[in-house]
Amino acid sequence: MNIPTDVSRRKFLKNSTGLAAGLMAASSSISSAAPARSPKAQYMGDFAAPKLDTVRVAMIGVGARGKGHTQRLANIEGTEIVAICDLYEDYVMRAKGFCDEAGKGERHTDIKLYHGKENNWKKMLREVKPDMVLIATPWEDHAPMAIEAMKQGAHAFVEVPLALTNQELWDIVDTSEKTGKHCMMMENVNYGRVELLYLNLCRKGIIGDLLHGEAAYIHELRKQMNAVERGTGSWRTYHYANRNGNLYPTHGLGPVAQYMNLGRGDDNFGSLVSYSSPAAGRALYADKNYAADHQWNQLAYAGGDMNTSIIKTTMGRTVMVQWDETSPRPYTRLNLIQGTKGALASYPTRVALEGGVAGATKDHHSWAEGDKLEAFMAEHDHPLYKRMGELATRMGGHGGMDFLMEYRMIDCLRTGTPLDQNVYEGAFWSAVSQLSEDSVAQGGAPQQFPDFTRGNWKSTMPLGIVG
Image 1 (cartoon, rainbow, N blue to C red):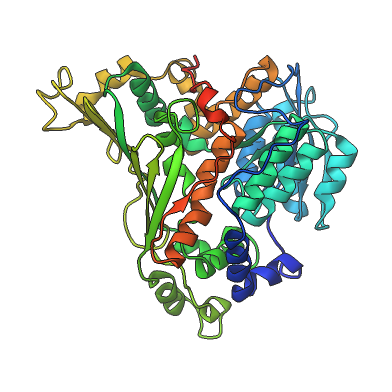
Image 2: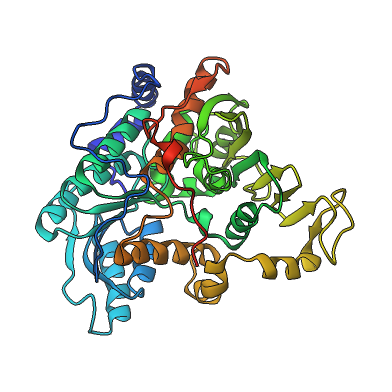
């Protein structure tokens, strides 16, 4: 869902002092100590909801990301798109067209359409009562929409990040526990072929005990600023200008966290330190590409171009997390995991093992990569990818990872099995944003992660290898 120029949230985002002060005030008032769980709440770590033969899905936000989600979900067996909501009518009608084409007159035949008014999504939830709500809206909308969806009886599936502040994350966790409804942050990168492969290799013990990870989202996206009135740049640019930390940690961190079983029995997030580089690239880009009186040239751009954070886990393992959506540099998520018997890394995909990789390397002093790695990958591919990789590639969405994620979401709801990503994982991964902002503001001072599980992570099952 994109924000029109005349609504209060846009005015709020334009007020850089208000945004920065609001987030800092929220962070400074929150302790890492866990509040007590409500007596009527249930722990959601291994939660399995009752089976749904058909999952009735409502969409909130069908612009950039929501468009693709709608198109693919409409083609997954066992789904029925029952409602579509966006501020813009043309987006709603485009999404309905995808459903009409996929349903061929047999499915998605009675879709309720909502557009135009800021709070129509609330009206949709009350009137339609869907089983599942998919939220692909600006970041500041994620928490209130997910919370209300669960209160109205729906499972909530939310684009990244799950929320902006730790208080919002606690509110999401508490609502999920009280309502018995899933709230999953849709970290699609966990479903990439290489990420699934590395998860499988880690579970097999091929690189030994895990010691260290490196995760990143380094993706030059300044051209998004061309979307001024509606679209991603129209709202994300204000976040880049007014906040200083890692604003988008989960694409790199999600897979590494699941390799390490963080928050699931073995280990958990402990503390974080963070530093940012100077802020330069966005101001230079604005000055070069827009008129002096353009709104992008009226911003201070206080957020550093590159943020580097280091996480220390409760077991003492380390994870480096970097973020840069500004600097001219090739795309990378790093995706490195180091074990006692070897290392796995990406960009390019490469493997180093003590004793070497058969047919590729003699020892760990050189990487197995390229064509020489293909046989090794085919042998150890994740069972889900072996079964559905070809279909996923055809269905698309970042090379098929979006489709695999969406398929698993629906499959878990239909079979009544726990989700691959629970609400606490989404909270831990998203918490890096506020913690990094706090650490940067305090000169790199360590920040403690809240334990969103309230200690229950120790008895939560690790993510299994699902075929």
